[in-house]
Length: 560
Image (cartoon, rainbow, N blue to C red; front, side):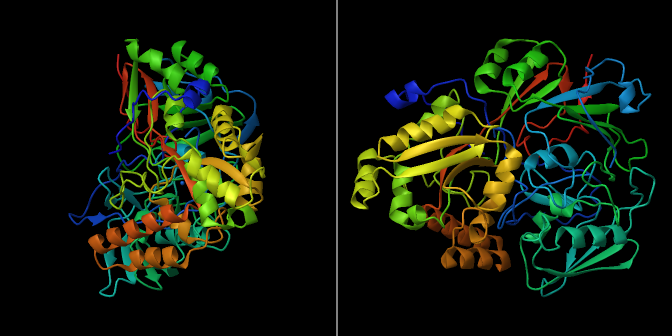
């Protein structure tokens, strides 16, 4: 579990930039759903990532990369009317139950509901576990558990997985789940250009020999596959589903009701859900671009649970008996991205100098003492973590000397980042690099623009985003990822980890990879985010870890 750094370090630079900054949320809610029909457990292995786990709000799978995107009903512009816990259910929610509905306040709204194509953790946060369910689940300790399928059995050579679907599972439209749906979902996710193409690349075929059996064939043993099936790439959609951009039909505890674009997403309890029924009749995810408005909605009772609140605005509520403030863990590595394909960033010495020119403690100060410094691509919650903050420690004089010796003093770099993040972060980077003779031109852009220009097309110098997917070290083995970092050494270490015969061997290989990555400085890791959640004091059962990338509301209970 990450240790939260609450140091009171107050350097001149950090005092100058100590503004009220939105805090950052993390990645994955490690909650298990579904009945465990087997006593066998599998330990999660590195997974893969693309864009699914990039960015959430303030605040992207073990080995390669993640992407997110979602799903099937009305899309209307305008603002949803929030319902409060304990109040009569909203008529728009489609529920006649006397059980309460809840409103969850969040920061980043999805730009599409298509899980198979649209990147972004905001999509996973609202759809996974609520509307869509995954083939497998993962527990807090990293143990793989059954989801809509029982745990897989492996062939002797570990290249074939056979999975049995749980009994009695139906989609919210009444159709029974079958292996044909699973085959179609996996084939769609792994298709070229889709969100699971990298994570599921080792799959060569998916077969459905009977209605309840799925057989997955791999090109080689892949330790990441079980974990990937707990993520978006393991989500089960109806075969031949359409209108995925605007709606969603899944097997989950809630049915998708309405997306009020620019405002909210509503869901209603699924009366035919195969598992444990939620104790709330529905939920609305209400999106706030203004952090003050989010806090006001919380304090006036219009919101029941708030994720992604600004640390300075949340802190005063810790002493208010009407609310519970929880600080959880995240996988959110807040990353300063370097475009390694640009001449300026082609030299590892220069990249390292940029890292050494930025005092990361200033980001902890900006976040009112919340956050952890890690110095590398792995959070403390992963078994292959080690503290790498000593690889490129803050040393302004050394950094300036490298820049001067390389004849790069006075270089101007364009810094484009999603405007969902506080400008104070960018201002701090700019001020720090100015002290080593690098000029930074800041341009905040819409997240949808960032996904297209930076993430997809790689057209940038510097950028900044919070990677919230768990086990995302594999991004660094993908030379086509938006950093364009190309290290054959790292690629081999991560590839070998995928096929390692034991967990200990895998973990050792990934530790080696993480250290090499940090020494190569393809990016800079500014800090690891903490997860701040505020809820009314009569509400329990909500996620408190990595809520930016997965927010399962099926266990929420509203007390008297």
